[in-house]
Length: 214
Image 1 (tube, rainbow, N blue to C red):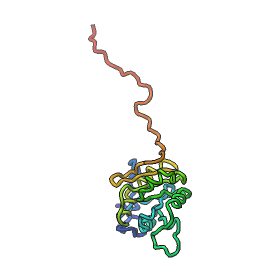
Image 2 (image 1 turned 90 degrees about the horizontal axis):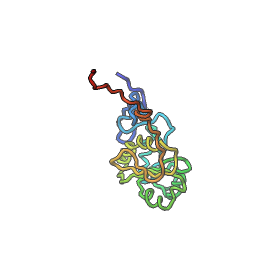
Image 3 (image 1 turned 90 degrees about the vertical axis):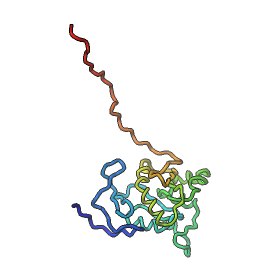
Image 4 (image 1 turned 30 degrees about the vertical axis):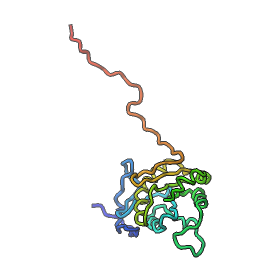
């Protein structure tokens, strides 16, 4: 029986205090992945060469705090752009223009529930001007527990889909009933197609003669 390696207790929202770091998960292609799974909530990357994510103010700061504990590359907008003194924790008076500019300059993917980021700011050209990449949830997520569950459930698929191309202006829509995000605005690099098993010159098949000897 394989022993679990020692690891700090996961204090994430509604997370079991058990980590299966000694049991590698399978990647989306079926091969051994660089992800390790926490029994209670999500997957944890072993490398930091993937996308980084910034949660908008309409997602609880406690979700970002919980994801940091399990070493996922998330931060809250209030940590990215500190609000004025006296502002309630989790509130961010900075406008969408300032947030889009910060994400575009730092290479963070903005994760939000605000529908303006897939309607109004797409039409106005704001997101394109700052070159920001955005993931917008198609439906509202109520409370930190539901938000935490949805973000961690989709996170590996975000890394897989967004990681195919360098960071750039794109708008993705995340539907609740789908694991992969849907690309709404922008271009995505295509993966090279594997060579077909039937490629190359086709040799004529040998056929046995059916004529009887004379």
